[in-house]
Length: 241
Image (tube, rainbow, N blue to C red; front, side, top):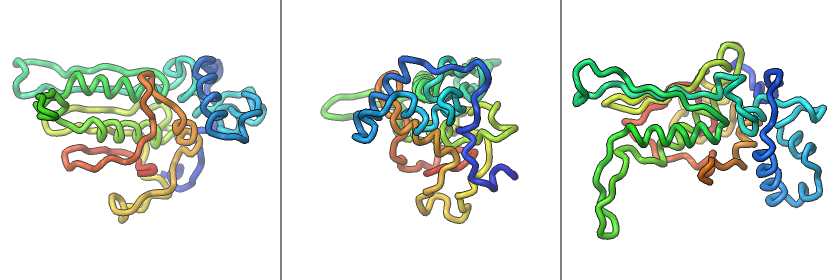
């Protein structure tokens, strides 16, 4: 509760000892920054990483945000680099069926893609007619799922007592529920939730890096907010939308 009262960017805290950057991921990230910013065109790699909070002021110490976005096997150091995905038994399942649970591990980009893939394999499908064809599509809008999961990953709390907790995704016959560690951010007014855009973010550094990341399949990590549906719930902290 005390941590949520102050707008502290915990993503700039030092990563656990022994954590290192993924060289291939760093090369791709730096190339994107140099492409979109003329000011960064002639800046060396370490300076770019510092400006975006991937490394600390001495240019050698990896930050928490840097590990979660561009780190090598971040799941070896933080439970925040894991997502628990669980499907509860449905009415049509055999008697005595247990829940189907998996762990998705990796960077923010890998977590997002892995969770969406896991949801696609476990959610129901509906037949949709489009352009004269019948197509199998998820009975939840994929765009909404991506938005809720990405928000949970980048706007969650990394305060003490929360940084070693994982995001939880649960599938029940009634809903998909995504729960991320932490409470409402200091910038969030509960009276305006769902009414006005929220401009403050909990993890500014993590969000700023993620704006330039792509998943392994090439999709953006941070996207525009999808239209809310009443049967798609998110429990946990509110970040920027």
